Amino acid sequence: MKPFLILSHGLDSSPDATKVSALATVAMPMGFSSVRPDYRDLDASGDVRRIDERIARLVEHAPEDTPVILAGSSMGAFISGLASLQVHCVGLFLMALPVAITGYARRFEAARVPTSMVHGWGDELCPADEAISFARARNAEIALVDDDHRLSVHVDFVAENFARFLRQF
Image (cartoon, rainbow, N blue to C red; front, side, top):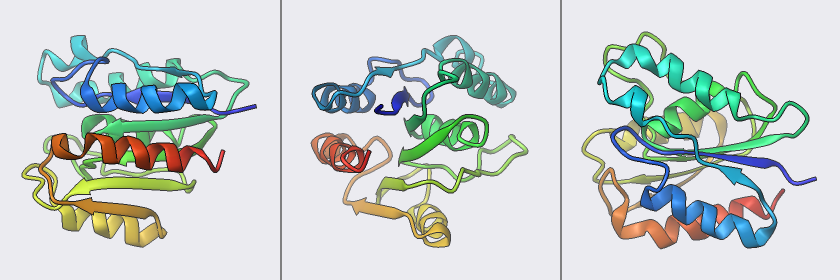
């Protein structure tokens, strides 16, 4: 049985966001089922305390009898890591990862599962050095690209990396 995918968009984005849509597009022909939770109502307040509600919403989408792969961009990556500690997570795919959110007490943590990351050298919101430190601490795969936080120049690259990551499952 293939793991179920939960693809989480970033702050001020949507389930139809470019990157999570690209991930869903490459996963479907590979036989993976996925869901893209909608966090827009929680994000609208701008209140970082709603991060816990975001995590809870992600966890609600995880089937109890099926392993999951969590993937997300920015805030979606942050909550995917924290949610991986609560569900039967077998893989993480993290884009533009913040390892801390200003005003939110918890630092980033994640289950020790196969992890692949894509991060922009020019990420103006989440410094690449912090993502590199996280990847180094757990020997995670990380691809660093000449892009900013949105990774908009590298959407196809991100999708190709995700497809390659999924092949191990």
